[in-house]
Length: 383
Image (tube, rainbow, N blue to C red; front, side, top):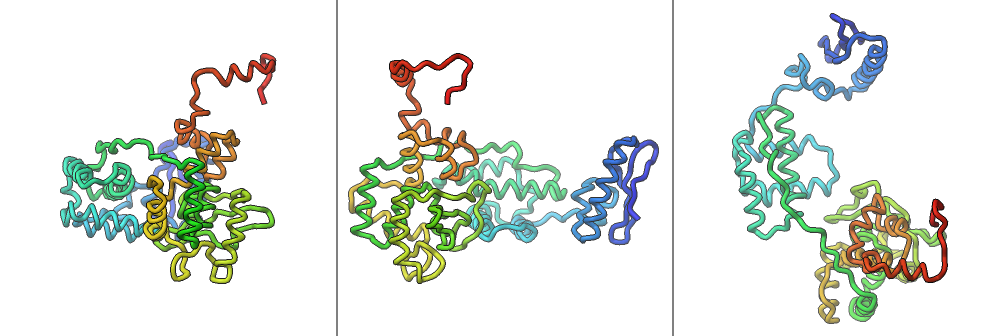
């Protein structure tokens, strides 16, 4: 029977786990109020044990029985530790693929089969420099290869495989703001016309890209059941990366987009092309779901080159929607919602320096408003 005991003025948890009696400190003094807290926590432990999800090391990382329930892991070669670490992770399949790719493409060729405990901070810094010399972007090094390495070593330290974490003190590489290089309205219309003429299979995809602000992976995952013509909404519920469809990375990405007239017209036209061919709205060659990289290489690059329009990646369709919407005065909350940003502040920080109307510092807008004769009473909120 699990219970909370008082020993020398301190509260302890007393329970059985896997037939072993455990007496673990709560770190609380034996007061009436603390006992209530401890008893509540004891009920949580009991419930986890009953449902076979209790992890001793999570509740008591320095407990007296840690070697019984979570023995210290042995020092392993770099690649073997990665395999064991990955086997314990519960991940989306796309995330698992990306992490494995980063490991085998960049990390393993550098560190090979070294025992993980012998890898030093200086070597990790040298690895960073090697990636820079290869021409990788700082964002790729920080958020892909180094991210995997940091998580691995953190777990190794927590498991006491290594005495200290060598990635601590290794700074992230400096990286500038993500390049936002939108198309002008004239360029947008030229690109759409070009696709209508040279690559009609993808013209509806391009129109929607310019008029929704959705991410390419969201468009590639869009299914007809998520297109609500009656309420004029497009429901973003999934993303598609590396030919796998799954839930979006963040909760803010799950949203309902307003179906603007150009989008409705494009989706109606697309319905005639793909409605009877399966679940997905946008299809590529061989009537399979559209893949971002194939679209970029087989359609986007050739069409822009043929038109003589300066090349920018397809993701700039999203940036074009955002900058044009803000520049003409659309409500920033609406723009943020369409983009799937968690806050309008994120939207403004990302785009205001690219929109002249939002970065004016000459006072002309204020003078123009004042010349109309309007008066705002002191203390009243301007609506």
